[in-house]
Structures are given as structure tokens and as C-alpha cells.
Amino acid sequence: MTQSAKAQFEGRDLLCRRGGRDVFAGLSYSLPSGGALLLTGANGTGKSSLLRLMAGLLRPAAGEILWAGRSITEDPEGHAARLHYLGHLDAVKPVLSAAENLRFWASLRGRTADVGAALDHFALGGLADLPGRLLSAGQRRRLALSRLLASPAELWLLDEPSVGLDHASVGKLAEAIAAHRAKGGRVVVATHTALDLPDAEPLSLDALAPPPLPELVW
Amino acid sequence: MKGLAVIVGRDLRLALRQSADAWLAVLFFVLTAALFPFGIGPEPNLLRLIAPGVIWVVALLAVLLSLERLFLADYEDGSLEQLLLSPLPLELAILGKVAAHWLTTGLPLIAAAPLLAVLFNMDLTGLGVLLLAMLLGTPVLSLIGAVGAALTLGARRGGVLIPLLVLPLYVPALIFGVGATEAALADLSARPNLLFLGALLLVMLLVTPLAAAAALRQALE
Image (cartoon, rainbow over all chains, first blue to last red; front, side):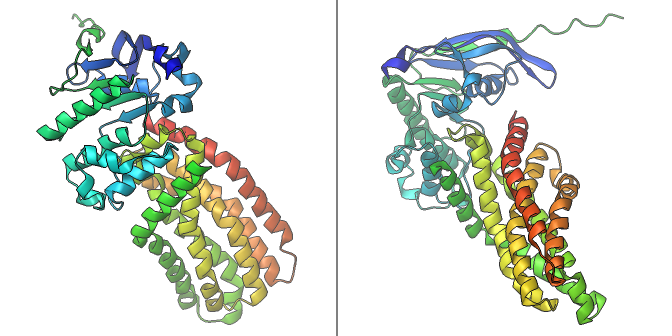
């Protein structure tokens, strides 16, 4: 981790365009090892789009995203290997058990994973053999979150991670994030609910919306 | 390579737990082909004559039935996003999914083909060549179909578009598949037709992962 600890994860002058409309412009950020970035902003200001840009699912219309000085588009598979992305969808298969769901995603990352411990952290140990279709929305969310722990990745990109979670689970999530950061991991979170993130750097997208088009004067 | 096996294993497990989907294709194949003797009349020579064409066309339609679910379920529940963000190259993941699709759709069709051969009064050499041609031809159907399924993923009611996109591309496989079987029934060599099917398979093994991966990336933007 000594090499990657020094690596900067940064975005320079990003312009995001969705459906022909500019969502945000001139966005720059920099996230050091152990750091956290808290994305805030009203609905539709591009929090999810920024996370998808960071994951490499979207391409910026202008600007670039760099890891250790190299653009992430140069090595998409290498970038994917160092990140966990948690979107709005939980990627839980209804006919597989909770443990099978988790084991699949962990083994795809090729490392020996501690599936049991990851499930236990989010209090899913007793539900390991239950098929995904019987899990409640909150339990499915917790199962998606336990992917973060089942296989290590340096960068966590979390889009509304606490949606549907009960109070205790939100605490467990904050705990997992704190442990991850203590090991030098980085995390980017978009959230509306209060999540305990000590000295996270706030990044508000409200100010970055491009100015509205001048109104037509008749 | 390990990642590829993980994907195939997971898709096979999913297919076994939801076996209704796999049965649908085989049952469609057998039942539809069995309608022809009723519709045309039980004239043995006539049935023997139309057998290769009917069996291939019905096999093609049976594969078509199963194509929509190839990527759609993964797309809707977010698994596709996660697959794209896994360290495994997307092209390999697609090959894994297509392999699982063939094992759960193409292979059962081949297993059911002898039954139809009996229905259509086909002799043993004809059946042997039919099975060989299907062994080469049905993976081609899965591979071409995967490109169609990936291309229609973002579109609304994409399932309706798949046949329009895929059926014209199935014509070469149909021609050579039927050609091989007909040649065998006429005591000619089936070899040239089988070689063409093999060549099609090799080409699609290269083209499908690249084309489908580009389409999936587009769908997830």
C-alpha cells in the first residue's frame, strides 16, 4: 500500500453532460489516502453522475479523472479492480441465497474472501441461507453493503448507501467506513441522511450547476 | 480464466433454480416441430424431405425465445453494472454468459433432436449429421443472439426488436445447417457445409465479445 498511499485520486475541471444538458461544469476534487468526500446537493445536481464518472461507467464531456497522475480510461480494468461501486440497485439475485450472492461477487474479484465475517458485520449471519427474494429492502441493501467488506478495494463509491437502513445498520456502515479509512482507504459518499463521517471534505454540487440559459425576451 | 468459470457456474445455477425458462425452449422446439406432421399429413417421404428445414427453423425460433433474458435480468437488478466494474474484462464475462446460455438452451435442443428425427422418419446417418451440425450451429445462434440482446438492452420494449435484428443474421447458419443435413440424406458429403458452420462459429467467437461489450457499455452510460 506504500505506493498507492501516495497516489492521488483527483478530477480536473470535469464537465458532465446528460441527454444534451450540462449537469455540472468546472468540477475539481482531490481525494488523498484515508480521505472521505461527502457529496451534497439538491436532486438532479449530478451526485450520482459524478460517482458514475469516478467509477468509469460514464465518460466526462470535458476534463479528466486521474489516479496517481494517470487517466482512469487508460486502464479501466485496473481501475475497476481498486474500487467498489454501490449504486441504487443492489445486484441481489432472488433465487440465490444471501451467502451465494455475496460469494459470487467476491470470487469474481479473485481473492479469498471472508464471506461469513462480512455478513456478520451487517447482522446478516443468521440470514446467510435465505434466498434473496425473501430479504426485505433494507436487508438487501445490507447484503449489497457487505460486498464492500467481502473483498478489499481501495476506493469506495457509495451512492445513497443508507437508503432503507435502520438506525443500527447506519451505525455499522459508519463503523465500516471508519475502519476502511483507518487502513488508508478512500471513500466518496453521496447522501441526504446524516452519516457519521469525521472530517470528511464536503463537496456541494449546488454551486456548480451551469447558469441557466438567458430567458428569451419577446 | 477463473473468473470465466465463476460466471458460467453462477449462470448455470441461476438457470437450474429457474428451470422453467430452460424447459420453455425445449418444449417449444419439440411441440412446434411435432405440429408439422399433423398439419401436412403423415406422408413419410414428404416428412423426410422437409425434416432438416423444419427442425432448423424451429430450433432457431426456440433460441430466439430465450434471448431476451440473456442480459435483461442482470441489467435490471444492477448486476450488469457490477460485472462491468469487476476486474474481469467485460468481453470474457460475456463469453461466460453466452456459454451458460448455450448449455441451458442449445444443448437441450440437441438432446431433444433424436425425438424429432423419429417423428420425421429420418434415418441414422441423417440424424448423426443433424446432431453434428447442431453442435456447431447452436453456439452460433447463441453468439449472434447475444449481440442482438445487448444492442436492444437500453431500448424500450427491446424484446420486440431482437427478432428483427437477429433473424436476418441467422440465415447463414440456417443455410449451412440445413445444407449439411440434406446432403447426408441425399448420400452426399456433409463436410463442406459443416466446415462453413465451423468457420461461422470461429468468426462469431471473436466478433460477439467485442460487439456485445461495446453495446453493453453504451447501454449502461
